[in-house]
Length: 210
Image 1 (cartoon, one colour):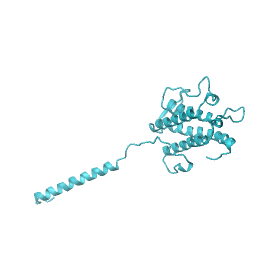
Image 2 (tube, helix red, strand yellow):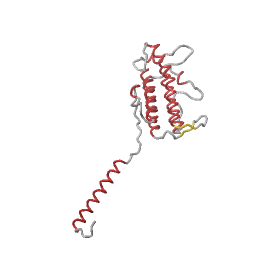
Image 3 (cartoon, one colour):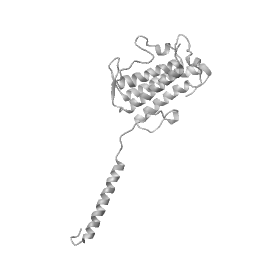
Image 4 (cartoon, rainbow, N blue to C red):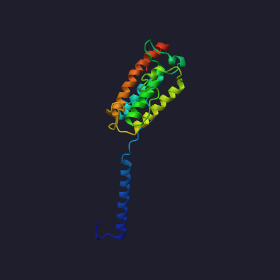
């Protein structure tokens, strides 16, 4: 500014500079990235809901939620007797048994191995490894469904608190695995058992598909 500028002009320029600085500071706050917030809700219930151009984490969790929703659909609109019904002897597979098994699998990989919670499995044990499939005589359908849903909800909470590169440790053999590996394994686990569920459901009432 010219040394011959008036005092009022100097104040005006100073005020303009202060206003510009405040404006730019506001922009920087608006543009600053907020910490990532990971959803804990099941939002992917249908195949077409799975995003095709999302980041790795979103893609993995979406595929897993779709597999969870598929298992639940395979159990919908059936009687308690149908859900208890075994497949072809000597197999002990049933839709209710699959739901019990996956409740234990959710707890095992996310809560026990990844998060380090000191918990027993709900339906099986070292002394009764197939208890989730075998011990159905007194199993109540509503209780099993509620337990499975609760484990899925807790799994999402655990997943939301870790990065894909964070690790846990298998309680049985000590092997280390990342959250990324665990999500991929869980997609594989559900995929395999949903194949079983496809056959069980088709045998019961002819229903097929996702």
